[in-house]
Amino acid sequence: MPYLVITRPLGQTMKLGEMLRTHLPQIDQIHLPLLSIIPNIDPVEAKRLRELLAIADLAIFVSPNAIECAMRLLDQAWPKNVPVGVVGGGSLEVLGRHGVTLAEGYQVIAPGDPDRWDSEGLWDELGKTGINWSGKNILFLKGIGGRPWLGEQFLHAGAKIHSIQTYRRVPLDKEAAAWKPLQNVEPREAACLMTSSEGLRHFAQVIQSFSWGRIWFEFATIICSHPRISDVALELGFKQVENCLPGDDNLVKASSKWFSELQSLS
Picture 1 (cartoon, rainbow, N blue to C red):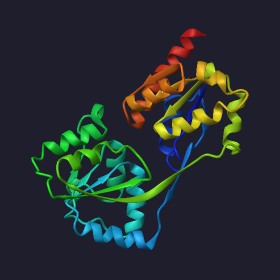
Picture 2: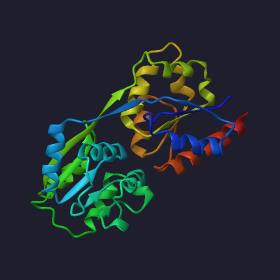
Picture 3: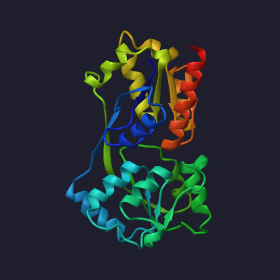
């Protein structure tokens, strides 16, 4: 029996799960939340966030999680005088739920092409504004760690960088019950939907510690929502790696393609 393993954090799987059930009702789903998102609710950081917004020339949300957790930490309407930069469609959707849209009078900057939904795409889009970033205050809203590339570009351009860690990621414990369903799955009939390099690394670390885990590296399909995640999958030793564009629609398309190919082999 084929399975799709959905690896997003709890609370972020409902829409994708429903879309997959609609398009691929014959495939069972396993929910394996590789990372939990723990919001920062420190009142000292909330005060610091409001102070930084008072001087910020641009705020960068690095992910949908950063938006949700920052809005919770801020606990008030986003200021219309602070432009917002995001890297992709998922973040635009979350901003919309909080009323931060062009239609509401906010300046929102994002790559227009889904092929460029990443830091490089956002940097190119920001370049089209013609703004001289020297001396500007750029506020990054992010989790702990993460890729530093975009911040480095601003530093090279002479900007002043500030950051607030709006959340932290906690890996799924090896002893958690969520791992157990994988034991009964034939890896040749499983596809894992990976949207995080950090989550993928944790997945590899845990399954290789199980007696049944090594075969997953050989035969399970790893569907990755960005080329960088695909590179990590290959680096970790997974043999069946597929890449797709970011976004739920593209994950569904990639899953449908995988299932069609699986059926053709049976």
